[in-house]
Every structure is written in structure tokens, then in C-alpha cells.
Amino acid sequence: MEAGMNKPVVATIGDGTFYHSGVSPMINAVATGQDMPVVVLDNNWAAMTGYQSNIGTEDGEGIRIPIEKISHGLGVKSVKVVNPYRLKKTVRAYRKLLTASGVNVLILRAPCVARQPRTWDLSVQVRERKCPGFDGCERTCIEALACPAIIRDGDEVRINQEDCQSCGLCVSYCPSSAIRGNPLKIRRKKVGI
Ligand code: SF4
Ligand code: SF4
Image (cartoon, helix red, strand yellow):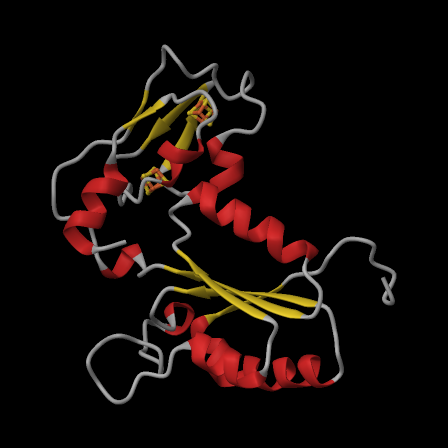
């Protein structure tokens, strides 16, 4: 509000950058009594710069210092860890975060799917019969998820099997239950997201 914004501003940061440069502004925000929702996208790697490990990476090397321990140590009001592939839980956690006062941290933690490529044959597909098409859908999976595997073919929405990593997000998102597959359950069993 002070800067002319009337919507909550969410400080969003990756796990690697949190360790490198996110901690000091958070100390400042706590010390000066700000209302600041913080979302940490924790995929276990510094993916942006080439998948280097960081001090939160679970790769068996060195001492791991989890983001939640640091956050609690800084005196933030609350810390919550959610698996972002559990879409409903994530939306609920976001809503709560936006209305909370003080500095509150939501850690969205799941290992990067690009580090655990799909090694099994599984197809996630759009059922034409149930999907009203790109123009008929109020907010398409293409717009909402920006997944490179979901493509538009005229008015049809299709999933490119070569690029799909079977994370399951589109299956939980589709408001018409038009995407077939239960990949999340299978992926969780195989690689643990
Ligand atoms: S399952 Fe995941 S990777 Fe595959 S199309 Fe859906 S959102 Fe994209
Ligand atoms: S979200 Fe579902 S209904 Fe909408 S375009 Fe995608 S598959 Fe079709």
C-alpha cells in the first residue's frame, strides 16, 4: 500500500538464491515489523544456473541446513512446507499466506522433475470428448500451467508425450477432468514427489 500497491506483494525466491541473498532482506523485514509473504520454490537444486547443489540439497554431501530452520531462527511468524504438486493444498496455503500479518514463509518443496526424468512408459492425455477446446475453456491448462508439453493444435489441446514428465499437475488442474492419467501417484511411488 505504501508503494502505491493495493494487492499483496509476494516475495518469491528459489532455494539456491534464498541461501545466497534472500536471508538478509528477510532479517530486515522481521526486524522492521513488515507484513511480507515469502514463497520459496525449493526444488533441491540451483536449477537456474545449471543444477549446482546448495546447502539445502539432499545429495548426501556436507551438512544440510533446511530453509525452515533458518526461517524459524530469524523469528518469522510462521513457516509451512507444502508439496506444490498437491494443487488444492497449495492453493489453500497461498490464500492463508496472503492474509497473514508479519513475515510468513511458505516453502513449496518438490524435487525438480528434470533431475528425475521419466523412465517408464506412461501417457497423460487430453480426452477430446471432455475438453471443450482452447476457445471453449475458461482458463486453459496451457495458460494456467505454462507446461511446455501441453500444446495447442488449432482449437485442440494436446500433450506432447516426448516432453511430458508425468508430474500430474495438469490432471489435478483441469476443471473438466479432461486429462487422463494418475501419474502423480505413480511418480510419487517411483521417485518420491
Ligand atoms: S503431467 Fe506435468 S509434465 Fe505432463 S503435461 Fe501435465 S503438467 Fe505437463
Ligand atoms: S484445462 Fe482441461 S478443459 Fe481446459 S483446455 Fe486444458 S484439458 Fe481442456
